[in-house]
Image (cartoon, rainbow, N blue to C red):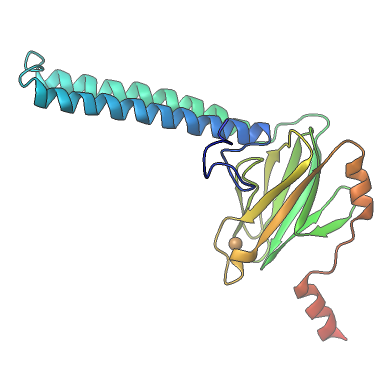
Length: 226
Ligand SMILES: [Cu+2]
């Protein structure tokens, strides 16, 4: 929808969705933008009328302006937006279902470790099957981080000692940028990863190929123990 708009494309763009969760978030954004523009134009038209046709609204009592313009209108508008936003947020939450693949995401200062159902681990590269819902179990370890693949869905915090789950899905195979979206120390900026969505059986094959080098911290600990 927005890929032609300058600055809206790119591998970290929420306005270039590649999955249902990101798609509904982008739709919410467009609805809010359209609504905000319509209300802004309405208010500007009223301001213009106040200057061009002084006394036009005098027949309406100030109390009416306040009740209808200050309470009823924002109440209805924000109420409708709230319902729409809650329904959109619901799609980001995992619901029990069959055919859901689970991947564990373990953020540590300053890299991402991913663990799969077969026990394989990868670092800074998350392999997922395309066209299938995936529950990402984000496991909090050292400090607060935040998992975010903007083109696939919303972000979720990693809180030490807690597991937070978010459901993502990629419509088609491809590579999508991922970041840590919560400042977590001096290495935060470089704490990026790539989500790679594979077609059908290619997912299992990619996992079979994947071998994770030991995380830097673990290597240091090992070296120290020798
Ligand atoms: Cu961070």
